[in-house]
Image 1 (cartoon, protein in one colour):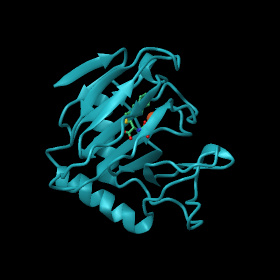
Image 2 (image 1 turned 135 degrees about the horizontal axis):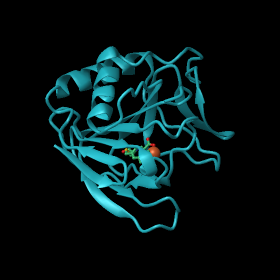
Image 3 (image 1 turned 30 degrees about the vertical axis):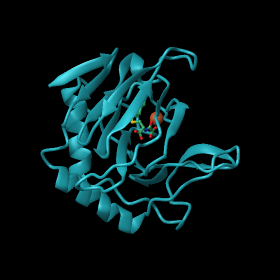
Image 4 (image 1 turned 90 degrees about the horizontal axis):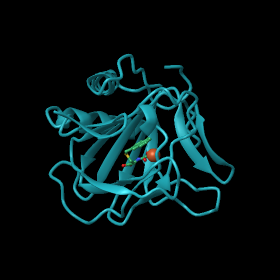
Length: 206
Ligand code: MD3
Ligand code: FE
């Protein structure tokens, strides 16, 4: 059942659990082509979350800043394509949430281990903010925080668990959001990790 958590933001609890093995297997295959790695941020520190990408465009960070790159900076090769199953599932979730015609050209995959966190930020490196973002949580649960359109807006918090899918569109597309430090635990499929996949339209028009 779809749950509206903010203006244009829809939570599909457990959407990915029916085919959880498939989701995990697809990401494990992607790992053999583009491994999780931590990236440096412009200030010089490293993100605590390890990342990789699939799709025509991959989100990267280095001392120069944040941007989408067609190539994996670690190998110089294109990112692996978004597997058909993952792309179809993301489009199906978007349609259920009221965003038909979602065609992601980027899938950022975040890997959290205990203590890893993501500070409050907004996703603004994409060209067309009319396109929603589809976010899929796998493995250990986390506390997800989101605020409003201003960094100072009050934040709300939500427990995201294995299989949950969030679709952010409309006036929620540019809200500030982050993830609290991951608490240690053991998940039957992912051990002490949490994976988050965010499907985006980075360069394509919606
Ligand atoms: C709200 N990832 O990769 S998912 C990110 O759990 C990111 O790894 C978090 O924020 C994670 O950029 C949060 C939920 C999410 C994803 C994208 C959004 C919320 C969003 C884009 C706009 C607004
Ligand atoms: Fe984000």
